[in-house]
Image (spheres, helix red, strand yellow):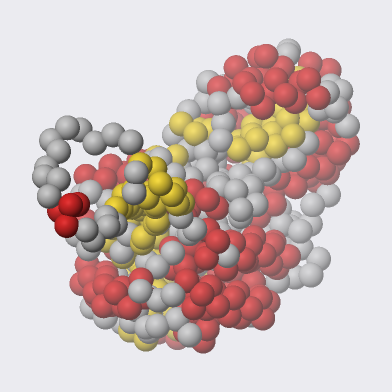
Length: 504
């Protein structure tokens, strides 16, 4: 299809779609067909400034809106997202490539955060202490930061933004979202649903773009906080540049998630979970299992089970009912992943399942499930975040060796252990230096009323995302110490007391 025939995806600023100052575009592919299905506008700094100005204009009234009105709006928004879930899932599938059931699952996990945000009156309750000193009371409450921004990745075009803006908006902030330019359309529909729910113009804005838009967000003096999810190098860059400008930042980086399988585990069940966690969404998840650490006698039977199950996966277009795994997101992603497979072979790893030529017709960006055995820590397929359907098996002799392997990795987003031993599980969960841990659970993404985040180079900033830490991130506390003296003449004649105040 020629470029002139495709639709153009525009920004949403101040409640209306606009091209703004944008003249540059990027292609939006259909990964299942290789079709250039749309162009998305790439914002200039002036477009970001227009979105921030719209958000600032809306801020005073929105921050002063009662908690109950904000809560009711979140309930209305939640119901509209649920009502339009199938449409949103289809958009995600067509632009990202993941199968429809996976896209629906992404949206359900996003809905859980909206559910959490609906409880904002309870979440923003402060504290009160009566008579902390004679005639003195002490209480605290939290207030919004101002204009907040989110910069989100392609792999969860609906869920990750929903981890940010519902909590930011419910706590009284206004928001500017810069979604991935690879799959931008879900964010525009979310903006429509916010408007239908009754959210005032300017409270939620969508600006599409590339590095120019990101840098404009990081540098804008009227943005108080930035939330980011993406690769570790960019997370570090976002954190350093935005904090240099005085912004509050939560920047979630990359992952190299290990799953340890002990000989006492149910190996068939463990293999099922490894295959689901390694190859679901074509491995394009920040919580995907990319390294299976096989301990001792578990190794040979585990590799054989994973090999059989990986070869049985049905790879195909995300909209096809029979597909279990869709394509990767772009031709660049396809080239990168197949390059890593070649690198693993050249380094001497045992290529058990080769996904470089899957049996799928057409020009889509397909790479099949790939399994390496006898991988060692110095190989690229172990060290680097491939972000594709590639699972590397590393063999170790003991649980202690497995823990040391995990703790030696700079990325510490998630990990898992498969075992029937409570002692081993407890030792593992207390010893690994990782933010999220699964025990016989391969993708340990916390529910929305907890918070999501890794350790070490998987997180830059003090706050994890969504849940209680999300509320803390998007607000700041005030503590008020108050005295209401009796209106008596003798009280006014006491004079100043220059001693440091203490409770009496």
